[in-house]
Image 1 (cartoon, rainbow, N blue to C red):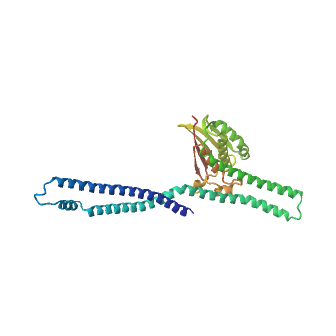
Image 2 (cartoon, rainbow, N blue to C red; image 1 turned 30 degrees about the horizontal axis):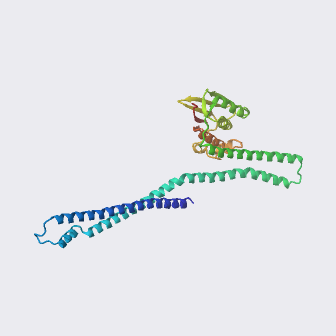
Image 3 (spheres, one colour; image 1 turned 90 degrees about the horizontal axis):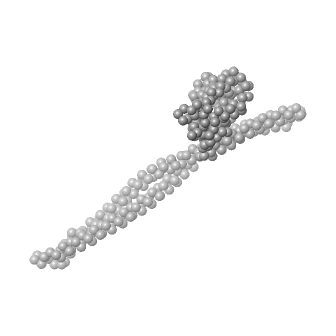
Length: 346
């Protein structure tokens, strides 16, 4: 599809360039041939005037002889040949322009379509991944219902168990669809970055309240080392960002460990860090952790969680919307450091 579109766009570029080039060439040819004809007439008139003032009777020169002399001095064939050479030169130049414009137009068409192609590829991948993730809980839900439908000993206790399992699968679907909607919303907000003053201490306080139960269940201590800094952004979105990073750190940290949360102003930028001593991320998986639906194998095997691999992708979108950067340093088996840089409110 994109190859055809690229060729079509190249042809359009080429047509525009050649129409302009040929138009200018036609104008140049008309102007120069007009000047050549004018020059020829002026020279003819000048020579005739000079001959009329000379005394040719001594040499028995007739008026007809003067005309022959003028005609020989201004050879019409030379003027015609000059016009032909001019036409050939302009055609040759347009031929070169045609070749160069074709090559450059093809490259330009590729550059023009590249962002669209990337967007469409990402959209197709997103649809494919989302369909796969949606299919899993739907299949489990359908299978469970079909099995119990054929169960001859189906009773109230079994029904309650079936309903509980179905509700869990529905909750997973709800969580997935909400995450997908959030990703779509952040794509729309990218051109309108939030610019309200946000107290990072208050954001952290709200985020800690949301992950408090998860941390207590694993006896994990979260050390709050956040300074009084104000950033430019959206309170709820930044709170969600910190919740995602803390939730990620807690899930992949061993019990009775520590997660450090730091934030400070360095040269007009707020640096926020979430440091854990968990399972870490391998060098192979590290470049992919912000991809949608991506989960490292270690996360799948060592942790029983309902994550769809969208949390860090949402976190990256939030950071980008706020005009910041997110980086990660990790050593497998030793832990990870997620570092977020955000603009200070001024």
